[in-house]
Length: 322
Image 1 (cartoon, rainbow, N blue to C red):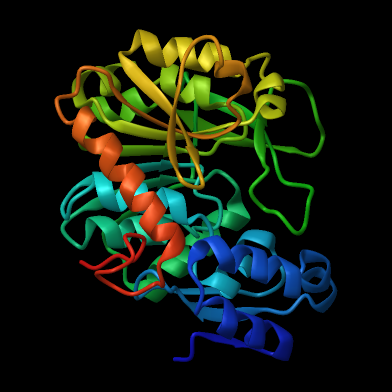
Image 2 (image 1 turned 90 degrees about the vertical axis):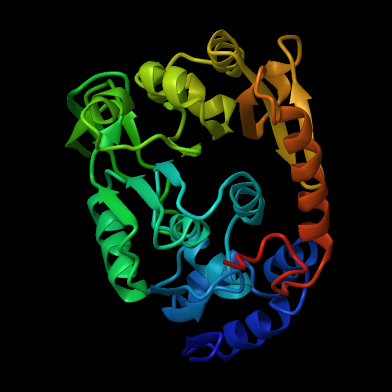
């Protein structure tokens, strides 16, 4: 199968060139020569192979996450580098807010056929995309769940994305909205206690500002399994839940975590004084973890190498060579 199959000649050409570049360059190149406004205008579907693993991705129209995957062979490379550094074959990753699976599929390759990825996605359309991609790639280690994750077991209102070019902005809402659908909510602890989630090595959260609720509903799991965590910190999204990043930092600190902002070249430690200004993805690890002093420099080294090196197995740490 070619790296990308699509009816758009421009998309094919830009993807062919972007995939030859290291990640720090391919994103800028793709955005310049196949801008999302052009993608929305052409609105073509595609089938593409990942440049990080033998994974195939299909999508029927333009969508920003999907089309970025088509151009580069991945969407968010930093999270994949961290997962590759932290996890081993046979591990468990919990992915809360999988969207259409641009990272979820690669997490499944990171842990291998003997591992497990438990992925949550309450949007029905996105869930069907995930189910199709799981079957397409024969990923038996991928456990798909259609619930939302929160701090309670309940029926909640979930506002579907109203942005046709970005399917990942659906969110739990408390106010009445006729556009919202009803979804079942679970807690990580409720599933952990019955064995539906094994001890995870890594938890990844992208839940549009509800990260605090996910953590609060996973207290037992966190205390026992002591997983590393990647979570999204976006103040406007947190504000929709009457939360801010300082509250997230304080909650994680209570659980014993040290937090780091993931940037282009590595990790920067977050403290209580600057937590409110550290917007982006955070990586969190237990402060008393014996491996922390070894793990943080290793992640920093791998992020720098991944940013600058070509996507060759055994050379670039973003490429899953397992």
